[in-house]
Length: 187
Image (tube, rainbow, N blue to C red; front, side):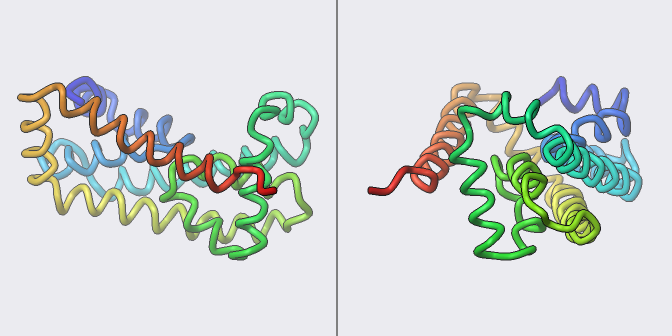
């Protein structure tokens, strides 16, 4: 975390942009905390994270729509997860495009699944922009508002380094278990 905060305070907005092309949650939380500390401007960080997140998902949709064969080579092992994302899109409609920003693992898969369908690009762009805006404001603003709590939590974990891997294993394991159960073949 120290390295992330040092990189963010040194390279700031470029790091937020690059991280937000993919997921970007950690970088945006770091930018919110640094804004709380007075080392970054929160509104600029949110605007950059919103723009990069929108661009990243649009590129994923474009690649899966116009380069299906090449993209499917990378996702042979994840076809069930792509099918699950497609099912979520059918079941919940366009709201899944907004909500996927907050669900680890779906952020990448939903644009890929949408790109494999005939879903309208402009409709996707509107929901993607709305989702990216909500995500950037909630995550960036939330980490700014709770900056003091996050700093104190970090100090607690830094003093007991064994807590971080345990927490990551529990969170990662829960997400993996959920996705594996949701995409499990039913008989």
